[in-house]
Length: 381
View (tube, rainbow, N blue to C red):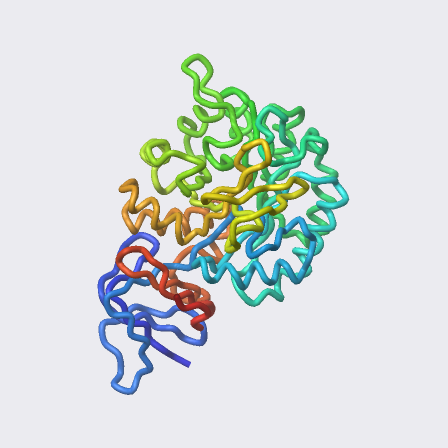
């Protein structure tokens, strides 16, 4: 079955294509053509734009569900809910917890991966538990420890081999050996929740680490005598930085500095969203900690930020309105870059002939109008 999507603009991997018709053939992308047969089925989005479905590679929860609940039905509900955010692919993200709990969660996500009917699960992101206490954020330090390859292999086996990314603090013991091995096994290593020095971060990157967790947050800041973790993400080459652009976690000018220094093609917009995403203000839980959601933020009782309630569709709109990214750059940072940074760009992140037709419709003000999954409209604003 062939249908056509007409729009004013199409955001492709390396270019913006003008007005035309995008072929959708049996749920997959075809070509962009200038004319269609008279009897063709056309969905007309005149005056609007087509972009790849967004890819959230760091998200803990949504719609009152948390990955750490270890609830298959909750993960399915997250998957459905994320379509309203423009997200068509995601990495369910864990929090620091006991070895046994993490194994059980990995197993549950692995089992439910292919049965979700909304945004597609492209793997799991283990945020921790190999962190350090100075920048623990909303992670529980009683479970912190040094990286252990045997433990990781237990989690990976339980998941069915779908852990795509794991985050750790580069100053922990045994980091370089651990990073070298899991990187060789195809797992992306991210650095964060760390009081590490530039030298420690550099050693981890040399061993294979390639992503920095939520840039600026949960890490040693930039000092002129010790550049620290922030200095590392601003100066090391060929690394990616996650960035939360909700206006609370990072000042727009700090976000702009990172984009200018690293390049928009090395910044991955993420949400770090917790269970209160898509829910009203009130009291929630993140992992094992009570959280208060109010005035657009999620905070622990002592006032520290605890994840976010950001939707990825809001992040792309924010960076354009802050005038620190063009629409093309914003879309790339929320689709292709996160996919490349987690080595899942063979599955998602771009409009490409033969790929699953997962895409979104935006108006010129960057408001989400519709989300398509496998060529079928699954959400309309």
